Image (cartoon, rainbow, N blue to C red; front, side, top):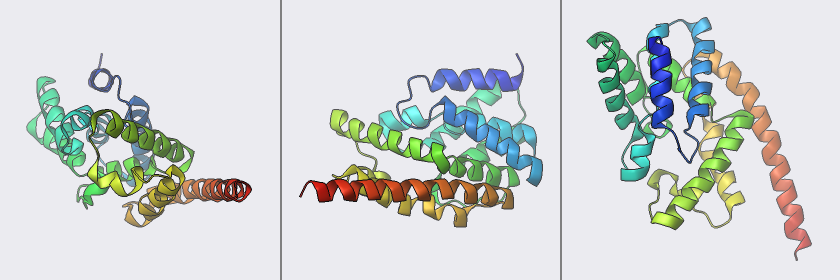
Length: 218
């Protein structure tokens, strides 16, 4: 098995049972988006693919201990890639991408590969998949608080609103609708434009149906 295959297998084992939206399907989509953007924008393919595969490998530790999964992921990636025999320069390039990918951190990476990974990760929060991930993540985080008492401070203002539809509306304004202005590459911006159209149509339909139901209950 080649390095990419071994890395994919390693990550899949690490994320087995991941209850929120940072599961292996997310990893695969981010990887595919990275490759799509790289075709137009350039960048080191090996660094980018390894960073895409490993960027969320620390999310389980974040669920269990709090903290920042980007930092945990970079640490785990560094240890794994060292065992795989990669050189220091490549490992530092990969972990640099991982440390700066997170949306809530507000990082502005300089390396092209890091900019592409950040774009790809943000794009997966848009479109039909973005809607699915948002609902799945909100449900998982609400259940986490209910069962363990642990809440995610950065998500508090949207996830824990009593009315989940109201929370979803606030989430849309806080995250997806702000993503296009924060993207780094022209290729990612074109993809985002199409995906946001889907989200706008869905939100309009959701709120129309919710208002109709509210009028009917009065």
